[in-house]
Image (cartoon, rainbow, N blue to C red):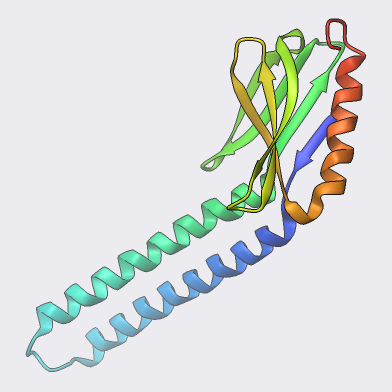
Length: 165
């Protein structure tokens, strides 16, 4: 069984933000180079370059953060429950690389749903017999019915594995 928690529409919005930030960086660099070529008054030159440098660093930071968020939304989290290999595999993006975490399928104690009223969302959490809590997906409150279907599918699938009631 494979569960994917990807948010394509949020990924598109994040990609647009990143593209807009990257274009802004390029325009600032272009305008700075043109100003250097054409020359400008020499008074307060150091302060101008200091200000441009600060804005340039901030905008580059926005591009990097936007790229990270875009990768997070488009890759999402993938949970694979494999009865034959007797393991649960969680694939999550960590910066620009994917991290695979494997758990023994018999180490899963239960599947919990936690509600965060402030964020108006539900979180699906695998609770391991060791006490470790592994978040696997998040759903907005308005998507409660699809979330409940997924919870029942996961619970039904795990019931077919010995030792899970």
